[in-house]
Length: 165
View (cartoon, rainbow, N blue to C red):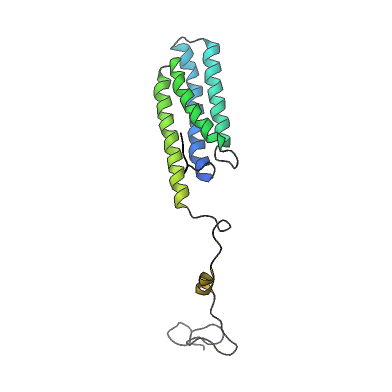
């Protein structure tokens, strides 16, 4: 899988993908009891696999999108495959794993779109050019010469609400 444009860190990745992973951990944890009761799976096997996947999802949900944690996005993708593979123990996990995998891919896609549409922070943006400095600079007012229509004190001379009285 080659995702050259995927943001590996940032607020949008942390919110979207972290939420998917934490909700997935809850669902995996809740699937342990049906695995034991309905599917008659070995308690140790169901608890070990389900608990391990739930703890991994919680830990990854806490680190995904953080600075220097780009590996968490790939680990979350691997977790999605493991949850689908847990369908061997509980067949409903095939469906739940596919749903969460779709949410995971959608979270990455949306985070990429949000990050592409959000302007860069001021410190990372290009420095202003000389032309931009001239456009946005305040007009120079020499001593004693004010622009027309302005009287001392900043009040308008005509057409304004202040008549100077």
